[in-house]
Length: 246
Length: 285
Image (tube, rainbow over all chains, first blue to last red; front, side, top):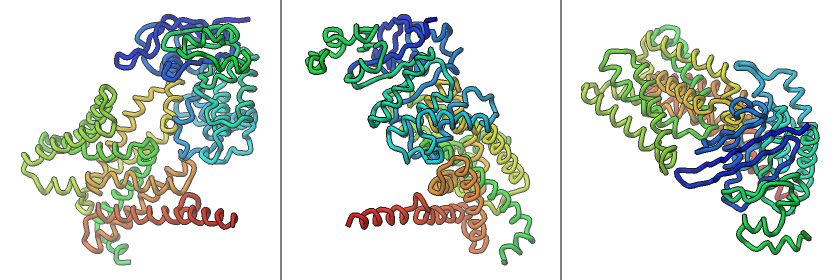
């Protein structure tokens, strides 16, 4: 049963009068792994942050799972860019994953044995259970990203947003992450990934959102990942696509 | 030994000891969140910003606690407003607002013609703590500790990853001002012990020392509280024995502990890191 997981209508966002996202309208069905691509400064992060309600929008409507974002925030997991995290923070791997259980804990309640076991289970899924007692800064970039994916898994969300999850990540971690994301989609979850590197886009995603402030393209990967469409967003000839055998 | 005897004997010394220990504990606890959020400068700002509130409270004859919390929180809001609504960066905004508040405070106090009070507010005089002040400090202390305990989960997640906290619906801005209010209350409680000018040291130094000793926030909070308390007691001893300003001796005690941790911390200490580098290089010879 497919249903609309994310519905964005006529979304406008600006920073002090400078337009960052301009008139984006799209519907994403549940069970899709969606990549957001576009040149630097195209408003990719801004787009997902405004969809999540983290920055105010000038105009437009966003519904997630059929309701305004504020009502379904606990069904949404968000993985921030790695460079937004203080990796010297005094927190262990397990405690960082435990944060994923916080949204469902009531005020004044602490995570208990049940939550800790669940967090360990999520760590196992990303293959990081042996590192549970390490401080997060002692891990490699790929391991750190896997821990943050485990935290998102711990949230038991229905919709996942990941901002540049593959930056500074080793190949095997990237494979693990993609495998888990695909698995989530098979179970009907919706996953949206801001993605920088076009080379793997076709392999990873079901659908692509091509942004350059405006929505340049949206749809199945094979339809959007065409030289003429991509060129409109990047404003440069897409010669390299030929090299990649497109 | 003499000090312990004196503590048994003199009521004023007992009050000083209790008050400054509590100040050490709560400064350590709140300080952990302040330094992890990169708000050390904010701690300095809020502590200075309570001055006009204290002065106006004296003028109106009300308890200085209310005026101080009011002017502290108001300054925190003004700092946030300016940095969020202009190109002025956060640290610049802090610099503008807290010096303005501090200057206003000095003018009000000068108008009241009370320069001795000003001296004590600025530098602290823990040996002159009255019973009522002690009870206020203890009350504030227990209140602050209780709130940190109750909202520990929220303070942890907003300090570590504010975006995630906002994404799942926590009111991160309210939590920020909640912490600013706690910070102001701690500052007020510390006024007589260390004084406005040196409060920031008690907020930052014990927390930073604890930060070098552990990789878990919960442990860090307890360590910082302990280090703060020990600094207060040791500082008070030197203040009493050698007749020195209590704020200065307490801060020097805290700094000494920091230097020890900086050099000898088992994991993050300078010597340990040096030894590790040496070993690594030797293994490559």
